[in-house]
Image (cartoon, rainbow, N blue to C red; front, top):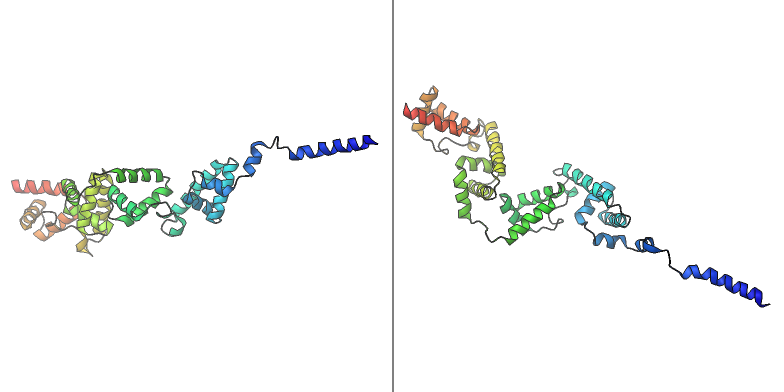
Length: 284
């Protein structure tokens, strides 16, 4: 009479015990209990990473955040990093045609003041140009470098004055260089001088040389149609007497031809040759 009840009781205990025991659940159970969105929020990934992934995965930024969290939980961050790189490349390819694809400077966590400071560091005319550089550098994977530069700018008490910038410009460049920079950057000559000064103080003369070369090419292409964009002989420091001497030295029919030759040679970057020719002409 009691034996069947005992067997039933033992069976019930044996059935219930595994249900209340959590032995063996281990890390897998803990992982499944995590919220993917919270995991994303606590990770090294940010909004712009999610935006790049949303391009590749063709979903919303919110859904991309959730998917990033799931990949972290499942140990698949390597795949996420590859997709972020792919998204950056796609956004870079569409940088001019589809600005919405890229992460703008505010989404990257920068302010207008940050852009203005970086413009000084990079020797750019203003904050707008710096914003473009910030956004491009992120797509190239250089955001950490930009952050370090901004940190250095914030910690520096040696912000150059306008007088120091003009002095740095005058030490390395002339009016015609500034005019070519102004043509490329669509700024005033005065602003171009400041830009050149920033580049000198930032050790970026190589970038300045590229911009000057681009300006010369543009002015050369418009030599006959827009005389205002090229550097005139008198802007380069030459006068009528110099042109007269050079006309004779070069075997040209008149001073007007000499002036045009001077201006063309300036655009070809041959100002040292002009200077040497004038010295030779003066010696007779």
